[in-house]
Image 1 (cartoon, chains in turn purple, brown):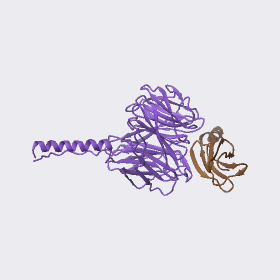
Image 2: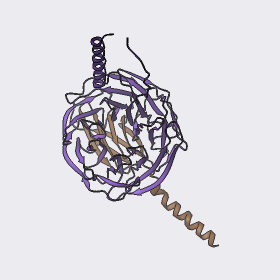
Image 3: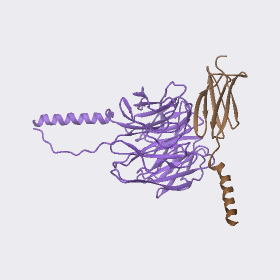
Image 4: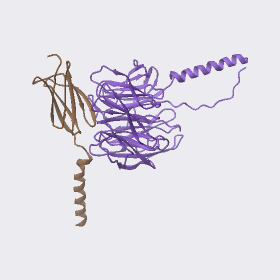
Length: 385
Length: 101
């Protein structure tokens, strides 16, 4: 092969690679969701647009109070590790009052870690992973209380032992009925940010050796706050559960929250999602619709639009973005997951609509999505003649 | 004797702490009415601390719910008529207004 042909081949390959990365066309995303059922297995699937392929549900050992007509608040959240064999999934169970933790091995097989499920207490609904996966925080949604349970997690890369330890419970000051949580900062994380529904506020408490302090750096009022998500650029969103409003905010490196502007949703907000780059945010609500916002560099929200699934017996409350900004929407009580490719210009039609393989219509509840880790390959010597 | 007394004290403390540790589930009946008459087949959305629920009223205009929340909020609609209420009572009545008469 001559130099000109080789150069053309290189350009073609690079162009294809760039186009592929830009569109995420061939990217595979792993999708995980709770079943909103008793027992409450882990729904899992692989998505390569436009096809969702469901794997066999994984038994959790936990249960929820969800029924065919009631969506019990429970979350599933993924920690995607760069170390093979250390990617983890956590799932709450509001009826059995515990949390299941699973490990995903290098071939995608999901198994519960030793000791799972782990007891947490009444009000188990929400979860937050430390950025390095070394801790899992479980804020408890109990009226008149503000407790956070911390689990520390150690993982030996390559399929070694995973150890989960209950590191204790901390009662936060100034909060009532904790609803949601996020950890900001790198590594261990510097602050645990939480929302308090009955105290009508959000705030971030410092972390010391992974344990949350009791006092927030500051408190910002968000009435009847429901759900809260913070992107890697520290832009955040929180829903006003008693109105059709979401609050935008920014968090400083020191954990200080500053409100930006508000956006209007179609239904009273429940749970939100924000892209890793902080450019798009979505909120599900008390009904069959979700609302999408674009978010600028100053963490200001601009309404993009809303979507209604038209299924009167369903609730559209939980959703998640993957690393390519695809949006995975849980149509709870309809046993359905939809996938959208939204942009700041619009939500667009669903690129995929699928029924999960759960046995009842209860599902799904909390949902999370993670791009499949690129499998490491060894570059062999080669030549082109 | 001392051991028995300490044991009784611990038992009493445990029993007193139970209501704090575990919220009690209770049944709430929601009645949907319009112009004083029950409304069958109305869509009902219920917001509680631990869940949201969606259902339809029966022929008597009723929906029942088991919840651990002290306070719940209910919205109902049918044929363009809407209503909402919230409270802590065992029976909550939603009165629809508007819509086709």
